[in-house]
Length: 216
Image 1 (tube, one colour):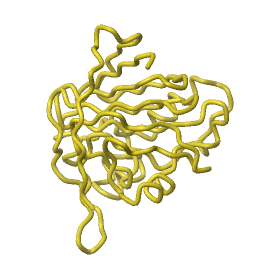
Image 2: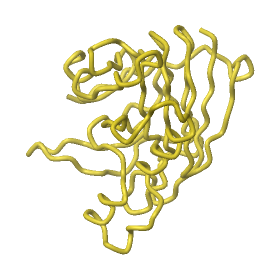
Image 3: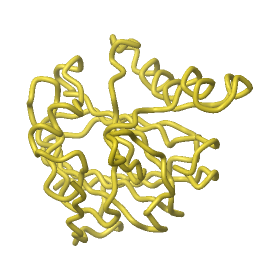
Image 4: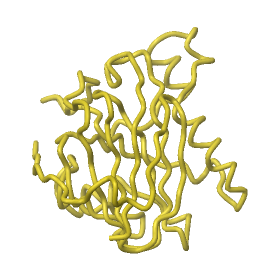
């Protein structure tokens, strides 16, 4: 089912307590306190922000696409979607959305998937799975490869075909479109600003995204 609940935020960037640009292909990881609001901005359009969330107090309870889809009875995310952990616990709620398409089925690119989907020559290319691991390694507090899970691809357009398959389609985002989420508990947010050059998820041109955080 396709759904898009367009809602703009009243929060002003100059009132954010945190404001950061994630360059194309780079990673970012930060904790959110309950009630804090995270906005991810697609600065130039058609960028894919591969994102994972963890219960900061219990990191093995990470974001679950299955629990989220089952809870809302919809495969697409938009305003009002509750992002749930493996335990079913609400991690965040999307409180504003000006894009209308966020994939939670396609997963993150990796060296292995690049070689299968595109060509063996893509093996050394930068990929989201490696970016996730680099960010987790910086924490040095017990995160391992086992903590990687199916992620959300904000701004990425992955339609489901009538036959039940997935396609990587041209993006529907545009410069300045954003998604905004309120943390329902202590949450660790992990982003790989996708470096993918082989499919149209980034319009073959990875670009920066902006992250802002408000207290509430």
